[in-house]
Image (cartoon, rainbow, N blue to C red; front, side, top):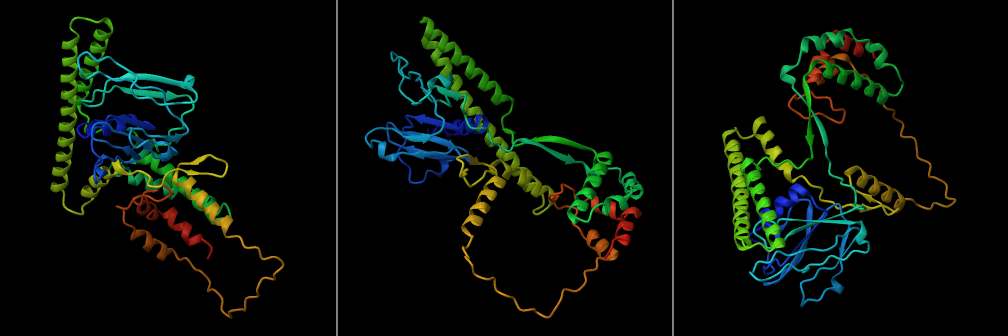
Amino acid sequence: MHSNINAVHHHLETDKPHLLFLTETQIRCPSDAAYLNYPGYSLEHHFRQRAGVCVYVRNDICCQRLRHLEDPDFSTLWLLVDTVGKASDKVPDIAGHTANCLDLLLTTDPDRCIVTVSSPLGTSDHCLVKSVTSFSPPDCDSRGERRVWRYKSADWDEMRHFFASYPWQQVCFSSENPSSCAEAISDVVRQAMEYYIPHGDVPVGSSARPWFNAGCAEAEKRKHSAFLSWVDARDRKAPDLSSKKRAFNHAAKSYKKALRKARFDRISHIGQKLSAQPSGSRAFWSLAKSVEANFCRPTLPPLVRPDGTLAHTAREKAGLFASLFAHNSRLDTGSATPPTLPHCGTSMPEVRIRNKEVLRALCRLDVNKASGPDVLGTSIIPARDRSPGSRECFIHAPP
């Protein structure tokens, strides 16, 4: 496992399996196993020198290790999960050995499992066995699209004309609820942005691999082709079985070297770009944040709701914590009378929002800051507040 850790991490990054079991890890229990971890997964292991087993569990899977069922003299792991697989296979690494069911995954409903076998990871002699179940939990990765605005190509003059000719009186004072008015104004601003600012939707949360170049893809293709040829020769008991096995071993080692070289070249390229940018500049932090985004994973595991379902997203977890806190914060006052609070003798002064003060605050906004919850970029505010119609809203606004 130590020599194939890059291939293991590559599989976790691309396929994102719920559970990844590895057997015959053949490493001693290290004093620090941090280098084996991967963001978004927890590692359970029982390492031994000439045996060993471990499992990577994705963070959105509820899993409990049953240590009382494990025998310390054997390489076993007992896990209690909602979804498990079926069986595994082994590629014989010694001439004369035959494939056998060495590694077993027990499931209470094998008919719901679809098992496929592919080539091993790295230079391992174990096939990669993938088990897909019809009752697998939903994939809660934050995948979707993010809208990117190209402010440098915007038509600011037409946008100001749009703001100046828009009937703001009907929008700003359409309701007595300030939140409703703010939402209506935000809709108008977003409409103007879509009209006069070029934009595009880019996917986010996908398994993007900028370091996986054409050389890696070609090496992966050769490895898979060599694996299929070797399996076919083994099934037919062809006389060139040994040469097919050597060709597969060579392709697997070449693929492993290609992955290592591609990652190293990518890291070197990013380091050169970071060193070339002025420290603290916008380009520097933009590149640094894009690199750190690959490791943005939730640190809090999924939480179980009272009805047994799981809370995956940050909002669901926050809502669950809030409801639990509210439930535990209730006090049984019985028939006690609420206390009477004395009058403080002072009152809040009248709040006046002046046009010049609002305009001054808007002009001081940093256009390099990110957009807020309303998804309105700060670059739009200076263009809007300089339009006559926008200033007229503040002049006619009630105190």
